[in-house]
Image 1 (cartoon, rainbow, N blue to C red):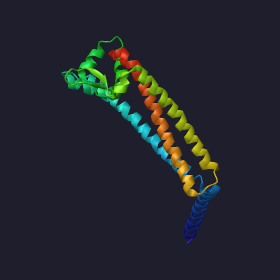
Image 2: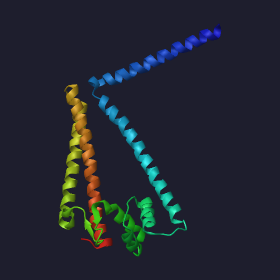
Image 3: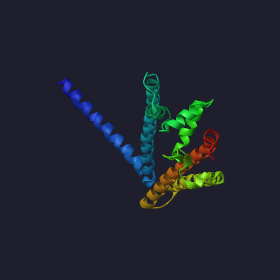
Image 4: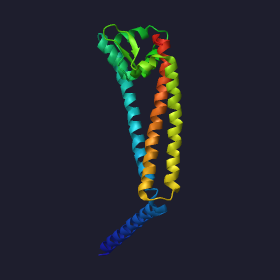
Length: 217
């Protein structure tokens, strides 16, 4: 009988703890008229995104391991083999003829890495095997520099807009809908800023690597 009383007492204490925890959560939600609910959701989403990025990093490590295993195989290294092997290491399917040309460079590894990073901006004609920029405006070095400047400006503008929306969402005295709009604009501006800075870095790096390794202005 005593053990039954102890069990009932433990259940009662556990219920009190749960009720206390729920009341704490409710107080946190009610704090400042619920204006921190959306930031808490964004934090949870950020943690999930961080886990996804970590999983991607592990995937890159697996790709490198697959490359080393594939490279050591005593197989006929035809064009498809070369393209798949480079894809495992650098993440892009470069044409086999281009890969073999870059392998003759004194810095073959660096050349393959930098050209692979710039490849989304490039294309090769199937008949003439002539390299060109995918977008006509990128064929001009001046146009590329101007685009990088515009992207950098947009990055600072969007990042500043995101910070301003976060500040308004925290201290602004408006309703729930307006507060939600502030946080939504902050998130969208942050995504836009991230895109601009990544695109700017890719275009600026390609503007240096492509003329150096491929002779394409």
